[in-house]
Each structure stands twice: as C-alpha cells, then as structure tokens.
Length: 414
Image (cartoon, rainbow, N blue to C red; front, side):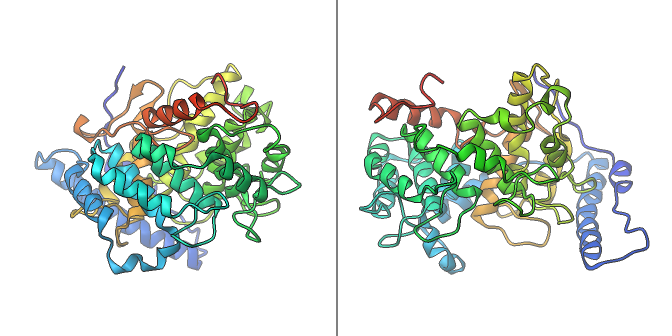
C-alpha cells in the first residue's frame, strides 16, 4: 500500500525554531543562521504553492547529467581526493543506479579495468594505482564493482589475497586497522564485514571478537563512537549497527530494550532529526547535513528488523519521513544538478550519493511507499546494509556463493 506524503505547514515549521534561552553561544548562533536559511527556502515554496505551482520536484535529469559528466571528467577541485579514487567511482555509480541510469558495457569495462589497477598484489584495493591497500578503498572498490555487476567486474576480485589482507588488518581485540600501521576504528569493522559478506569470505575465525569490540564502542548517549570512550557519531553508528547485523549479532545492541521500544540507540538516532530543518545532524549539538539522511536515516530499516525479531515491530517510520524529504528536495538540490550539505554549500558527488540514498530510505517503510510530491520523485530502493541496490547486492552474493567459500560462511543460507 502506498501513501502520499504532504508538506508540513509553514506554521509548524516556524514554531520549531531553536530557542537559545537567552544564553547565546557560537554553536547556537550557527544553528539559528542555518534555520533562517532553511526557513526562507520553505517560505518561498509555500508562497509558490499559493500560486498553484507543484510540490517540490526531484530534479532527476539535472542530477543524471551532473553525475554522468563527472564519471569520466572530474574538475580540479577533486585533486585532493587522488587517494580516494575508488570512492569517487562508488559515489558516482551508486546515485546513477538509484536514478535508473544504465551504463553501457564499454564504459563498465573501462571503469572495472581502472579499479583493477587499484588492486594490490598483496590483496585489497588502494585509493589509486600504486598506492597502499586500505580497507575503506577496498570497501568502495568492491561496492563499485558490484554496481557494475558484470562478470568481468566481479571476477577482478582476488578473494584469496583479499582474505589475507583482511587477516593482516585484524587486531587481537577483534577490531580492524584501516591499513598497515593505520588508525583503528569502527569503520574498519564495518568495511571488513561488508567486503567479507559480499565476496563470500566471511568466517567465524576472521571475525572472532569483532562483535564484542563493536558493542564496546556504544556510548552513554546510545549511539556508537569510532572507538571505545569517544563521542557518538551518525556515521560510526551506522557502521557499528550494520556490521553487527551482517555478523548476525544485532541482538547484542540493547538486547532487552528492543522488547519495550526503550533502546538507547533508537532514542539517540530519533533525536538527531532536526525539528525545523527536517534533516539529520551527525552528532549532538551539531548542524544539519544532507549526508546524514543516510548515515542516520539508513539505520532505521535495521532497527525495524531488530524490533521485528523482538516481536515489537513498528507500524510506521520512527522518524518524520515527510520532514526529511522536504529538507532534501527543497534545501539540498542544486538547480543545475548535484546535491549539497545545506543551503549555501557547494554540490559534490559525496553529498549527491548520500542525500539520494537517504531520500530512497525515507520513501519506503517496509513494502509501503512514502513519496513526497509526484511519484516521479521516487528513487529505486537501496540495500540498508551495503547501500547498493538490492538486486545488485543479490547478484554479487550469488556470484561469489556459486564460487564456493574457503571455510564456513556465516551468511550461508541467508
């Protein structure tokens, strides 16, 4: 069953303004400035609605053009991301796939061949040809190859060497370093779990102690930090929760609390949605940012699955999907294509990727659609664990499962 989603009233939005309680700070001043910028956007839209102009439109053709142009020609501003080139492939390919853009086989082959140049002889993928392998680059490269979805792209991955690389990143306490001698945080555990899951090399031995280490990163607020003792963060919370679900250890999060809707993680994520803006912030006392529409919003399908297993399944979204879609459609679209963090910011492929991913999440609750405005605004669904289309994730999983697994695979039969 589908449900049309209507705009919030302008009065409701105005009444949601931040109250600094006569105690101004630098962060409160920044919050008020952002709210003023966002409120102007909403007021302008409501004035147009009085003149019978349609509800906000997802500028699909402009976004397609912007992404297709950047796929093979990046402006000089991206030079600083020379060590993140598989990420650039993923950040462009994924939103194109959500928009339903088909890439011809010749270009798919060209992209796959480039990503192969980033594969290290010692296993894993680097941020560029000739660089050191890195778990984050490996994650991005494998997701990009899965989105391409061809036999050529999937067969590029040397799974034996990949597993050896991941073993070398594994730490005695169950965590993963991002690269040899590199930082150790919850991203490493998520990247490792995702890569191992998709490529069929996930074994109990490789992830011994990992789930327990991830749980130790949950903070007093309820969200997950990058490492034990640090601050709860939206990106880290997504990584921690997704990794636990992949490892079939999601029940370790607030194990009994999901029975009564009193999960501290659930409460923390719900509270990160901004009242006036409608989008999500990444941390307590921070500004709204379009990319957190996925990093925070993308955790909700995972929460729903845990609630369902606890026999406490919700009947609707636990966040305001209407307000989130308003923010993304009204405040985060560049009229020439591409999406942004917040009004006044520049467009880039990173925010285009994650704002569209968050919009896709907001448009669905289980099998029900929740599309703001015309159904022409609808995007293709994204997988809540991997953030690629479910059909592409299934294709990759089947491909690698058919190759067989070196040892017992925790995902076997799922």
